[in-house]
Image (tube, rainbow, N blue to C red; front, side, top):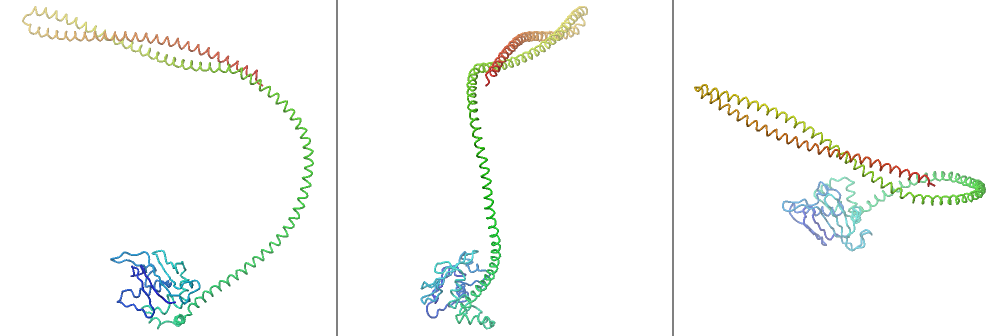
Length: 449
């Protein structure tokens, strides 16, 4: 097998898809430090199944994905594909059908790696064995990284032996021998496990033999029990047969009695139907009487409310009449007092006129006193007129209250008369209703089957 082409996309510094063709003969890559020469070698190791992030000069496997720069954003995926010439058909049988084998390894940030060989999903172990059979791989001594020469010089004998075996093309055999050894160890473990299982099965077989003997004994006893049960059931069947004969005779007698009872029940139903027809008018009368009684009860309650309202109005009017009488007495007293004041003022005027005639020199003083008396008399006249008007108004209100009292007494008397009449009608209706109910009860008792 020979490498033909290496293609990188998003791997380390190769953010854009880059393809390296490996032509027959010597292929060299020349460039200054930092141009990515070592990244190509690491991409080749990585696609062949390298699992050490330290070998990739990284802290983690996700660091092989392009992490971004000042001019470009980071990527979330990286992919490396290696195309191999298989015209000689030296690949393992699983991959030996095609003349060209393409191995692709893809990694997603935070999701791990996946492998495909000719478009088919494959395990990392399958890819590693593919390259191990070709005496190459991620750890092949043909792939020399920076500082590896000095490591080979200072390597231990075991490491040197590994390098010589890889150079001789037998590293794949060692890997397969290791896998075979693991399978043999697993087979030995399985054999030991089978011995344990066989011992357990032997113990279970002995237990099953004992249970089989018990089962045979159980079957024999079960057959005897079935025989005894059959004999007991036959005896019970004989008894039941004789009981059935007597029961059939009793059933015939019962059927005859049932027929007679059915005829009696039919007659009773007919009598009940006729009684129900006779009760219909009485029940209708009862319903009508109950409706009339309910309406009269409602009317009596309304009349009772009207009577209570009339009594309250009578009490209110009586109180108003009493207050009007007291007000009229108070006004009469005030009028009498005013009349007394008028008489006293008249007498004082007469005395002043006499004094004025007797003493002309005191005329100014007397005139002033006369004027004062006249003013007081005018005020008294005004007060008397106002009191007279108020007394007249009180008389009118008292008369109106007396008229309303008389009207309320009339209404109260009418309401009492209507209430008495309603009570009498209620008593009559109740008597009629009791009579109807008694007739219904008598009819029901007389016709009850």
